[in-house]
Amino acid sequence: MRRYILTGTPGAGKTSILRCLAERRYEVVEEAATAVIARAQAQGEGEPWARASFIDEVVGLQKQLQLGAPSRDSVQVFDRSPVCTHALATYLGQPVSRALTAEIERITAEEIYERQVLFVRNLGFCEPTSARRIDFRESLVFEEIHEQSYRAFGFELIDIPAGDLADRVTAVSSVLSRPDS
Image (tube, rainbow, N blue to C red; front, side, top):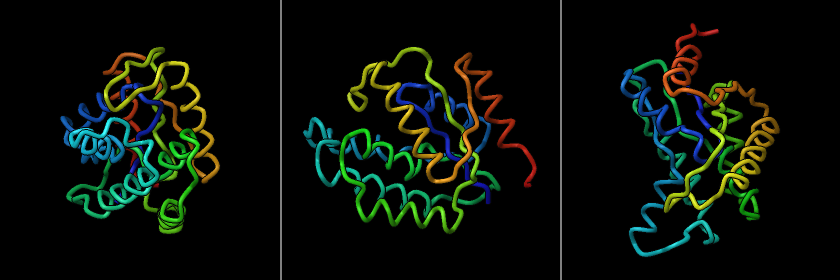
């Protein structure tokens, strides 16, 4: 099983790419942080990322999604990973918890994900949403923190440059369709 991480700054177009990949019958695993935020906001909590337990909730759901992902194909694509959660904790100024440290140790020791990470570059703007309250300038800072986190944990970034959605999906698909090395 080859598990790839698709990541990048908020608003870079990851969700659109993932939807296209799912249409092409790739197994796609949704982002945990957005699910945690949506669930909390549905219960009336405006900014769940400000809560001390937020990072651990995200990493817990990431682990649950990874362990529970169906394996009917030889390739899975994950919308973010615990390394992204490390970048998020850093960006938010929150400590890296024991749970997050343990999960990063697990995924690196067990080589859960491919070492090549599909890094979706920003589109030159960032549209705020209820779950994404970040402007473009802040998204560039967050993008840099993501790069630093992945490199610090020994991952190689494969740039998916800004551009037309079809071109980006083709670039990602070409990596996913490579034979096992």
